[in-house]
Image 1 (tube, rainbow, N blue to C red):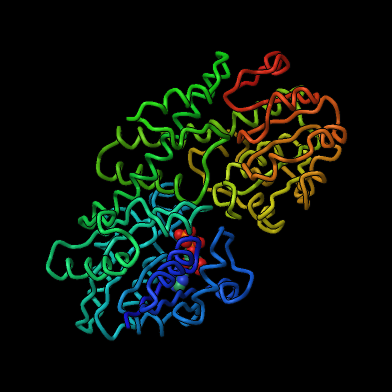
Image 2 (cartoon, rainbow, N blue to C red; image 1 turned 90 degrees about the vertical axis):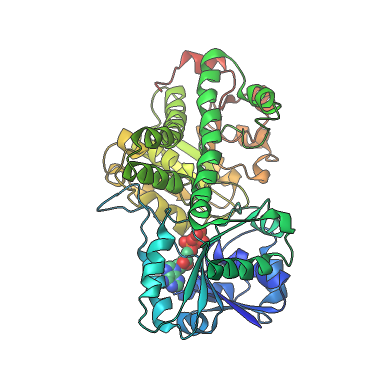
Length: 483
Ligand code: ADP
């Protein structure tokens, strides 16, 4: 029986391994993590991450050929294939701070693999890493002093949170990069055999190591760039009276462009896009390509601009101040169907409003009060980031008492002056907006950062409505935001 071990039981490792276990009953899969609470949650009925369909997959395999454990060393030692899916955050201090990936967790995982292994293994990079990480990891592994041979593969994960299970069941492609030596090719084949149990062969792409590593960064950069492109257009639409949805539709009908990922919004979030682009920027700079670095940096800058534009619009419309006004925040996760708040635009929007002394009442169906409070008080890295549009340490500029986390949208909006919709949860579409309007201060504002509401219907009720990239209400035209 082939044994797989995955180090890191996070958003990538957990769902990916659960699907491998489901699709490959003859493989034993162990997911290990040093974070005991996370492992305990994976072994309980309350999984540590919310992902549609995940519960079902885990229930079918857990205890049969899928195990979650904190005994990292034991499972690594026993495995034939070791996936490494640990976190690779952006460095916050030192060389490359604000851009380069922090490989501390990766390096310690690699050293541990080298220490405990007693037989040859295939080591698979699953978490996104800077190009040429495999080379560094190879060096750590090959200096194990025991003569054990390791083969490194890069197998980046392309799943999208919120649709992870669907994406894993039916991936557009699986990418496996490896050394172009006979041993490297054998390792590629071993991993290909795993995926081939449910993924059609023509969707399994094999490349050299560096191409696979760079493809992941490139894919995320391209996706984020589409969003920043349409968001840049949304600013122009508001200025000119064009409608960004109509523009996106017309543009997306060109088969060379395609309709997907052309929705304008308050900005992209998630653990990957920004981090991977910054990483790409850093790699370009290190390779003496400042023009290329600047090109990609602009994608992040437009995203920051979109978030501050939104905040400015809210403040400007409400007579240039939100001080002591109650603002309801509907949605905090970076997108619907996930509880993940990493790099969610809601953090920057809320901080922007808090600095202007707003009283926030936040509701998200999947994000806990603890998480929201942590996100709003954590200090972000000091790089050219939206935080620099605000005072240097935002946490010193607002009081935690300004933030209340509540249990439903009606409570959040009761007595509020304005509503900001920051995540496109389906339940926000079917709220009773008549009831909400009645219970709000007048004039009642709604700022839709995700195209959740039917703007015309809400105008009929009496709301002053702002939808990103849409022609502005007369009120908003009279209260221009400095953007
Ligand atoms: P992703 O979204 O890429 O899956 P997460 O941050 O959700 O990233 O998960 C990464 C996981 O890796 C965390 O649960 C963390 O505790 C775990 N981890 C980090 N370093 C190690 C290590 N050396 N050994 C085991 N687990 C680790």
